[in-house]
Each structure stands twice: as structure tokens, then as C-alpha cells.
Image (cartoon, rainbow over all chains, first blue to last red; front, side, top):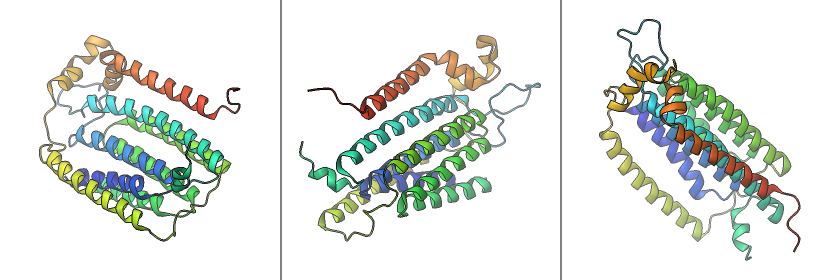
Amino acid sequence: MIILVASLILFLVGLYAIITKRNMIKVAVGFSLMEYSVNFLFAIVGFRPGALPPILQAVEAGKVYSDPLPQALVLTAIVIGLGVTAFMLSLILRLYNRIGSFDLEEIQRLKG
Amino acid sequence: MLELIVLLIFMIAAGIVAVEIKDLLASVIALGAVGFAVAIGFIMLAAPDLAIVQIVIEVLSVVFFVAVILKTTHVDSTLGRPYKGGDIFTFVVFGMFALAFVYFGVRLLAGLAPMSRELGQVASHYLTQGLAETGAVNRVTSVVLDYRALDTLGEATVLFTAVIGVLAVLRLEGRKK
């Protein structure tokens, strides 16, 4: 239980960065933090005490495995997260070349 | 479970450093620390496939961040500016979001007894029949590449779309008007 709550706190740190920070790089960092915490939460949910990785063992009887389904879906989510981060960073780089800073308030002054 | 709690405390501390520090390069490196801690946590949680992927992705994402910062600036000039009325509004909005999130998160966790639950029907089918049906020794691979291969196709689509988007945004020459 305390582990789940701790990963929710990590999510809240990322949410704090996204909502209150005025630097675009900080917003991207907060986005990555939220992504990590959700991935970690899924891995925790799929784990059972004393579980082995879901890879076939030589002797099958009596072995406890962790849940392969959340692991497979988180595998997809991690890779997609990299694509999202790369796209976000390219937009940030483009905006920096346009306005000369990472400040979000400068962008609000751009009108078309 | 103690080592997982220690690891999560380290992750939260590194996350707060990444959000609050003035030097953007240090912020990105703290983010990398969180990512590698996540990889270690995946190993503790019996998910070696996730750990391998997480390390590769983390290295790439830190390289992307550092490349952007080297091309621009590494000083966060927005820190230390005095707060105005609108900034207080953002903090209020964050408080509301956080309260709603904590409320629904606790409700979710109450119904989600961690680390003791029985496997669902689908997961136990994957575990018991995976070798006979797909021939894959690694059950995660059998899910990714056989049972849910369409999901993986969608993942590849998203990844290529992101690559096309990055190329389109970073193209040096705009279209001639």
C-alpha cells in the first residue's frame, strides 16, 4: 500500500511541474515524471510476493510468476513515451528559436 | 519491500530536485536518475524485459534533453521571479487537481490490494498455455508479439508518427510561400 501511495506522490510531483512551472523544459521533465510513476504503478500491481519473472523455468511445479499482461502493456507505453518526449522537445526547440527563451509567458505574447 | 520503499523515496527526492533546480542540465540529469531508479525497480518487481527497455529509452531521452539544452541555454530564467496574481491562480488550480487526484487515487487503491491478488483469467491463460500456443519461453514476448501483436503494430505506428512529426517540425527550410 505504501509503495502505491509513494508512486502516486511521484505523479503529483510531475503534475506540480506541469501546472505551476513557467519553463518549457521543466514542463517536459514533469511529463516524464508522471509517465515513470504510472509505469511503475503498473509493474507494482502485476507483482506478487516472491514472484519470478514470467519466463519459463526448467521445473514448472510450484513456481509463482508475476503477471505478464501489465508488463507487456507497460513495454508499449515506455516506447510511446519516448516518442512523445522527442516530439515535445522538438516543439520546444522550435519555439526557442522563435522567441529566444523557454519562458511560457513569452509564448502568450505571440499573437499569430 | 523495504528496498522498494527506499528506491521510491530516492525517486521522489530526485524528482523534486529535477523540478526545482535552477540549472536545466542538472534538472535533466536528476530526471535521468529517476529513470534509472525506475529500471532498478523493474528488476526488483520481477520484470526484466521492462528494465532492459527502460534503460535504453532512458539513455535516449536524456540524450535528447541534453541535445536540446546544449543547442539553447541551461539557465532557468523563470525561477526567482516574483509571483503575480495569475501565478497564485495556477497554484490554486494545482491544489484542486491534487485533491481530486488524491481522492480518486485512494479510492482506486482501496479496491486494488497490491501484490497479493490472484491472477486474472487472461493472465493465467497466458502463463499456462503460452508455451503451447505461441512457442515463446518468455511470456511477455508471447503477449507482445503474438496475443496482442496488433497493439504492437499500433505502438510502431505511433513511434513512426512521432518521428515524422519531429522531422517536420525541425525541418530547417520552411516551404516557400
